[in-house]
Image: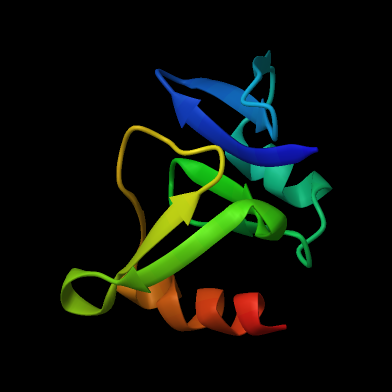
Length: 93
């Protein structure tokens, strides 16, 4: 039921599909190693998302992608130009 994981002020938080937020004592890099690469993608330095909770994505400035998560977040979630093609390939599979 993990929708996405994000980091803020050196703390990592798991957000579930009901928008419940929990602190977890691991870095995003550590969590990334434990999660299935089929279901989860490291969007940027701040977010890892579950494929089932990505509402949509659209082109953003200079080849980047703007990703909409569900439950929604109060900030722009951007995939870098370098990771954009990898992200699109992951979404399509």
